[in-house]
Image (cartoon, rainbow, N blue to C red; front, side, top):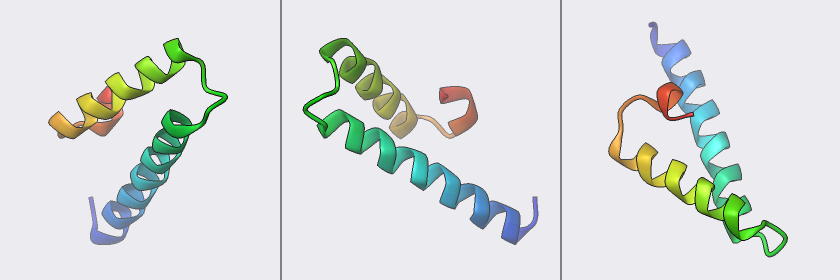
Length: 54
């Protein structure tokens, strides 16, 4: 993958993670949804494969 594609991909991943964090903090997010989002966030932090984590 060339440098521009890597940067674009990283930007997309960061955007998704930002949305996940916002949903975790949102008071309207149901507890079971929040738990799944937290699991995803934690798995992503441990993993190198963002697509697989999704």
